[in-house]
Image (cartoon, rainbow, N blue to C red; front, side):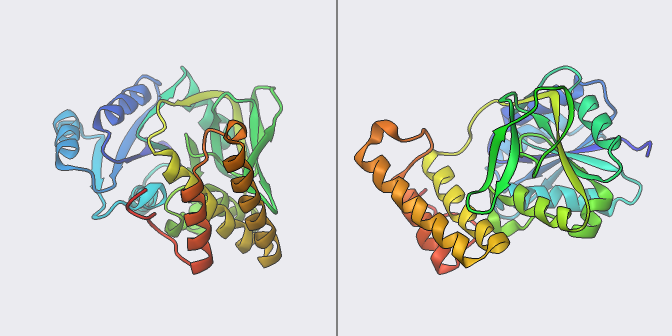
Length: 288
């Protein structure tokens, strides 16, 4: 299709970063249009975005009434893209704080379009890893092939992904109840079951400029949502084993904090387990 490729940018209270992200895409030399999906940001951030982009016909700012997380914001923008029947065959999706190497967007799109059954794709964050889904551990990564170009992947990471219109029309959008983390893997599993493929384009480099969430928030969402994902795809037995592993790690890292990874917060992990067992989903507790 000859239509400008739609870029959905999920934004929350980081207007300066969002402006820089749009500039990074502008510099890619690709015909693009933008849907900024705002997750109920503070008024000053919306005002800054409107002041910066209000005169640009290729940028629209969409507003959520509540913070729906990455999945909720993404769905707001992707729904608007799908509603435009004359829109592009692929859309790009990212958070408000990414940096792109020259040629990243063109390489990502060209590689995805060259795969007849590709439904989802992602750019390369430069860690040498490939997304993988384990029946006990859920979404994770494993060492990948360093050869540039398309490489099969189990799911697309959320730093910069490409989504095919026909795929989303068939399988639907993100499960917004995940809020953030694991929603990409859940969508990829539905796409796979429908016969679509997913890949990572090695060499199409993208970077997250910041980690916008607190360690506690990331810990909570990763714990709760990983357990949800494992149960939905593998069953209760696998989810129970994963829960026991979560608890064992929490005990070990509490006793030996020097061995704990950067993303670990005992209270948040226990809250994530509690809320998984209680069947809670959506936005995390406000005190995280």
